[in-house]
Amino acid sequence: MHSLVLAHPSEHLHIDHREKMRSSSVKKISWPEVVGIMAPAAADKINADRPDVTELFPVSVASTMPPGYDAKRVRVYFDVYESHGLVAYTPVVG
Image 1 (cartoon, rainbow, N blue to C red):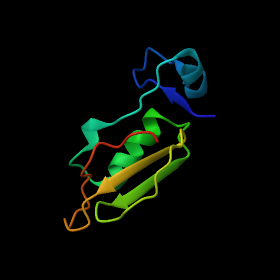
Image 2: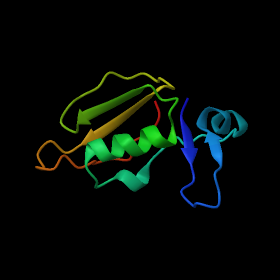
Image 3: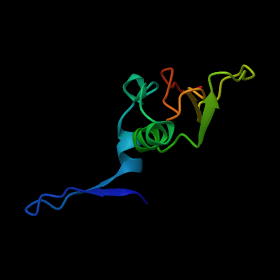
């Protein structure tokens, strides 16, 4: 079970992330805010926002990928020619 404990000493609230995902009908499907950051950090952000996404694929922008939609997959395209491996396109579910 993933839970979040708020750091303020007077508040000790525990939030079950699975319950939060069930109670919210809106799930994030794209991450434009991670464009320009390193691919591993982007993957961490996506995983934090959508723990139900089980497949995170770092993919070089030079690669071709077969078409197809998978609601449990996010492809994170990074620039292989850039030394830091920065995210080149907005990652989306699919």
